[in-house]
Length: 133
Image: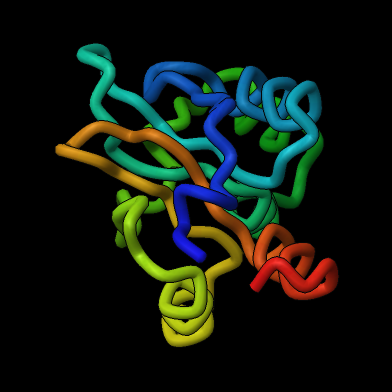
């Protein structure tokens, strides 16, 4: 089975110049734990997950500092750099190994330099559980 058969293509994204508050709303609205970050030209430049948000918030002591994090901090300031991507033709088992090796929960899928989907550990487990893989 190929990544293209399991990947989700209805990607929700966030702009690099959005605020962290905007990102939290987008994450909650899409019910996902990470969003690809796009620059003003629509190119993928990073990924923002709940992990980066929690890491940024963990060192803040005052409610005012937390408010500033959410209202005044841009996604660009706390996002992780663009992760390793995979091709849609990659075998799902190889994608699963890549996730394990990199210790990530998801891999973004690119084809000819364009972001076309995402495959997560949950997608792989679901396929194994339903005997698709």
